[in-house]
Image 1 (tube, rainbow, N blue to C red):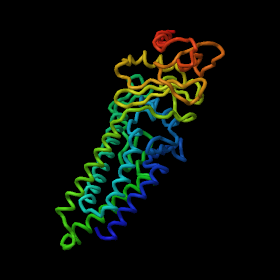
Image 2: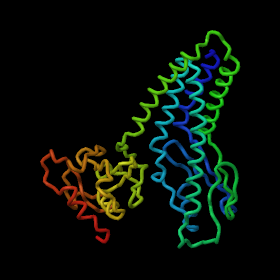
Image 3: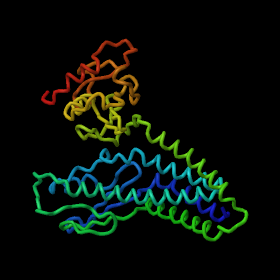
Image 4: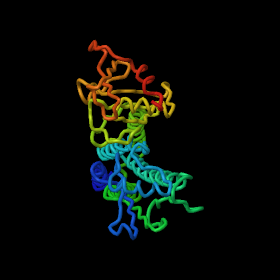
Length: 339
């Protein structure tokens, strides 16, 4: 690779670091009753903006409640961007044309898949409406635009990249420019060993992709973000690190709760089988914010343990020797949704 191409790839890779701190996409809504507009911003791992106001409006037309738990992409997007950064740095370090071409293919493929994923979510979100919604317009769907403008009843909706999204686009253009330079302007350079470069690039790509697949397939609990994450059952914000709980499915989806009772109710109401669970954890009452496996926990109930949703259960490690109920007993206590 020429020095200019190498630095273009290096700049593209390092610029992606900014996407961890900037929103990728935004949806803006305007209507006569909201002259200043409403906005929902999509980040690598969260949503921000007027999400709850939009949810309140969407309730009247039967659209689903928007929440971060409905986007499994938030769990792997930070890792995916990290892989793009690492792959770009590897390409610049090895100065390999095949890696450069692979980088471009990955950028294009990721962009196409991201737009399709966004369209698919928007289609389901805008078409699967509650038949008991207060406002019903026969034949009307409310799918937001993938990109650009669309009128939805008396609202105008704009869907466009935000700062992080433009960084991705710029990075892709830099990689595309470097690829065009190398494969069209420099392809006759006698100093380039294409066959050897292909072998070197293929080996490096295989190693990187193998590591990426292994990392992506790893199912593990996610740290609970106190003061930010919402309980999957009661929808309250999780703030007390002495009573929080979490379970992770075999497919890697994580559900957090502000109370052990909420988790037990949720598992029962949704008929989640034990075989579908990879991890079930509760916070250690003596060490707030330190999760322990429910199989290793003893649960003590009492008025002195004032948990957020009045389950009044505290979890302690069995190794502490504290007598208490097992997780199976707790599930039986709170598993009946009529209690």
